[in-house]
Image (cartoon, rainbow, N blue to C red; front, top):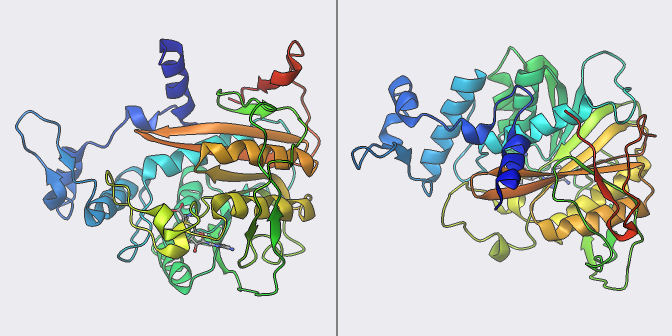
Length: 361
Ligand SMILES: C[S@@+](CC[C@H](N)C(=O)[O-])C[C@H]1O[C@@H](n2cnc3c(N)ncnc32)[C@H](O)[C@@H]1O
């Protein structure tokens, strides 16, 4: 990779407070000295090597997450065995991207009746990680939704364990309504028709959707936004770390890490493509309820389809970004139906390649 690309990546990872998480790795020796419960998980040998942990040990990962949340964010936190253990820097990157989107003035500031930024975290999980980070870093208020009783119970525990921000977070159980309509995923883009810029914070101009290469996958599951968001509610954004996989087999096990994850957390019929497509469909009915709709995307191959789907449903703006943490790559996608307040220069030289960059910092 060229130097400028590397530099760009590092810039992408920079948070709103000016810290790139990858440049600020945890000091395991310091954490072990401060937190005796973490000490047994830290490997100090061989001599002169940097202390580390066994990344394939769920208990070590969970304890690291616990102490990092406490040390860096003054948060008290825990999850039950086997549940998805969030990596703190990765989750912070999404929060920082949102913060930059919200302050970018690309679309008008509305929406909440009070001055406080209000977000909706779809599938907050037992960890309730995004509301905890968003509330503690930026003072945002949240509704965090989930479908499982365990997630709801533990998310509430995690909120109540942090009384300094507990007033900012509501945990909402999604009722599994079997008559919820299915959403058709109509197809994937012909790869030649759209070029996604590799730049971060990229706004992508509308392009025709080629539905010929169809791959029918439906979302069958509980409501996501429609039927969960109330008629009188307005949010500045929604966010989501969706179940990425179509099957437990596909979810498999990453041999390099052990972040846990139950089938509810990792899998849904149709995988993230179907799940995010449902969010897009829901967003067409909730245009006036959210300033920004956003989601994490786990597979780059799904990004093209999702972007084309968004233009098809008539959004006014789409932005994408790449989250890089160590060897893990994720993508963020954001859209809105509100008219943009500022125009950017579009390169018209090459119609086939009409992506352009809009820096929002
Ligand atoms: C990949 S986990 C993300 C958990 C947490 N947000 C994180 O980033 O670690 C996906 C979560 O979505 C929840 N979920 C699945 N379908 C849902 C739906 N229709 N509405 C709300 N949450 C849902 C799952 O129970 C699970 O907790």
